Length: 179
Image 1: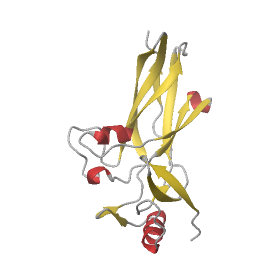
Image 2: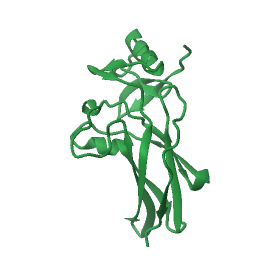
Image 3: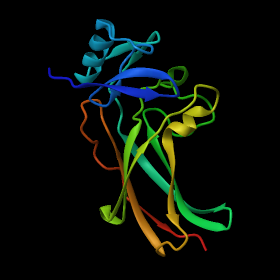
């Protein structure tokens, strides 16, 4: 198996090893064979242990929903779409999902957002905290459409999987812009 390794800055100064899109185990500067074995197991579709928890292959997102909104930034009134989806056992519920693993869930961190069939594309990197309620941050994103958006937009997303490929797209949603 040919894995490409590179450093990844995760949540401040912590550094992990990245193999095919999956963050492998290890504190800053870790280069040990344990990290390589864990990443190889994940990239091969198996399970690995991280922080005492078993990690399954990265799940693809599903059940995309979008709602229009407006945010202000100084004098600007910015239109956008709030996206929410299901990933793994995480659908935004009030209690931690069964696969949350105290913030070590093997949810995708890289997503592509396609607006209007790919006329506009955005790559999003999500990171989330470990305290209560942060599982919601692992499954949502705000798309800024600017001051003068189209009357409606279609949106779909996909996630980068462990092997570096992209998942299938979620369902496509149509969102009318906020007045």
